[in-house]
Image (cartoon, rainbow, N blue to C red; front, side):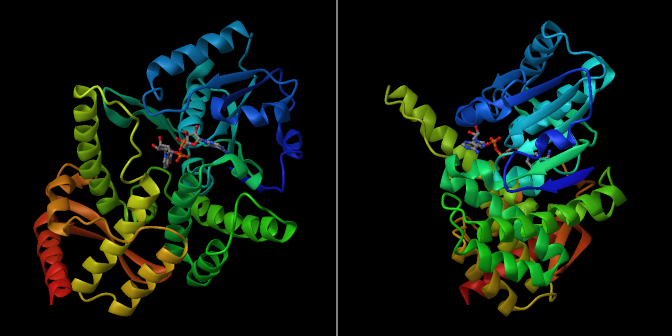
Amino acid sequence: MAIYTHKNISALTKHIPNNSGIFVIIDKHLSSYFSLFHGLPLIKLTATEQNKSLETVAAITNRLLKLGADRDCFIIGVGGGITTDIAGFVASIYKRGVRFGFVPTTLLAQADAALGGKNGVNFDNYKNIIGNINQPMWVYETPVFFPSLPPRVFREGIAEVLKTFLIFDAAYYKKAVKFFSTYNPKQQSDKSVNAFNDILAKCGFYKSTVVSKDEFERGERRKLNFGHTFAHAIEKYYNSLDAKVMTKALEQKNYKPIKPSFMHGEAVSVGIVMAAMISKAAGHCTQNFIDMLQQDFQSVGLPVDCKVELNKLLKFIRYDKKVSGHRIHFIMPYEPGHVEDELISLNDLYKLAKEAEKKIDE
Ligand SMILES: NC(=O)c1ccc[n+]([C@@H]2O[C@H](COP(=O)([O-])OP(=O)(O)OC[C@H]3O[C@@H](n4cnc5c(N)ncnc54)[C@H](O)[C@@H]3O)[C@@H](O)[C@H]2O)c1
């Protein structure tokens, strides 16, 4: 899989093979950019988790058939992670698989979702439960779509960039913190685009290198789950609270869409800090490291606390799909650029969480 970073979309055609047909599966929220793909058939979708479904896969397949897409066609998925996950899955199964590429339009998708070949959809309230691993031919990254991105959606992507550098590269971690603490995605200059592309290219290099060594996540790739054990628990905890608020509002006929208490990247930010607290309790990292993380994440607009005790979150970790036989692969940070994959029992994690909590109270 190749990763291309560009200032704008004009070099895209260079990367499209000479196929019999090119089809663009694109997020409807990107209507102001549709003209950039002039002349190409656009299959538009509403990118919600509800629509990340087999029904959407069927509807897109129908459109492809009606448009006459054959086995030599090329599919381009343009949008955030929802769109690239769906587009990659459709391309992987349409006529037993056609070639595809991605143009991710959120920072989270550029740093994470569009890289690594995990494609799929949700099913019966289970997230990403149907899917496959199949690499796109390329991922084309550009900040050109960011001006329309809601600031909170942009910022949550920073967590995945910082996570990658905390795992692999201390110098780029510092560079990225400095860059994102002043970067304004709505006002871009040549200098900021170049600096952004340099950071994204490095981030993509690390993710694609680890994926090429361990595509099916049986070893080194697990490190990319750094911060995600607590992040998933935070998301589950707050999703259930958000759902209660919503149900009450519906009962009182006072329906207003609510903003999620924690978006995925925000939960990852807090999850990384919590992982560091566990690591300190285990004697691996220092308080200075935790202080540095908190300061850095706050400087780029990310949360560092979720107001729920570590111990309460453990209840949700028990049902994490990465738990097997009461043990979990926990990614333990030591210092910037150094994490270890440690298989620990849930009981030990519980004890470390208690220890970490005690230290905060002291
Ligand atoms: N395949 C993987 O390895 C992987 C990894 C992480 C996450 N994911 C998946 O990615 C999804 C989340 O991805 P995401 O955060 O990129 O979100 P998303 O696709 O939900 O996009 C977030 C919101 O921003 C809108 N949007 C996207 N780009 C825009 C732009 N440039 N301007 C204006 N609006 C825009 C979308 O319509 C949506 O409302 C989840 O479904 C998750 O499961 C997959």
